[in-house]
Length: 119
Image (cartoon, rainbow, N blue to C red; front, side, top):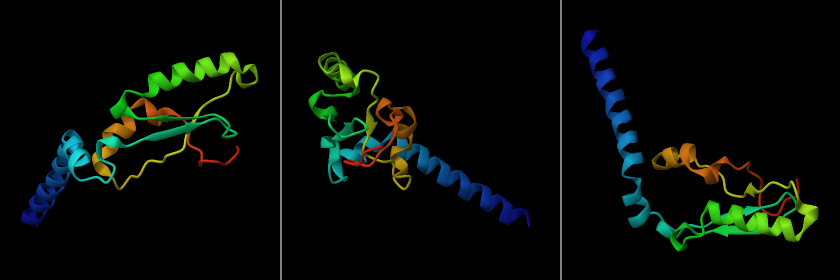
């Protein structure tokens, strides 16, 4: 009885350590193995899809740049004052090496909507 309990605890610890290390060293996987690698793009758009912005972190267009440009867009187009941006990319919980990013990165704090659909 005790031996199986110890084995179970050890197995759970191994899985947890694997998940934690996967999140810490995920940049290696992303850079070397993932299809889009470090060149991944993220699309955001307004509720009606009339304004879209694609962030490319590898080229320096990040969430802060997007927010600044969207503010300029709102100043030029007063009908969009108070409009929110939505991310058009989801979170894939099976990509456990990105869990840390899902929780901590600003790009995932925007509400989700499917690309091209009007809310």
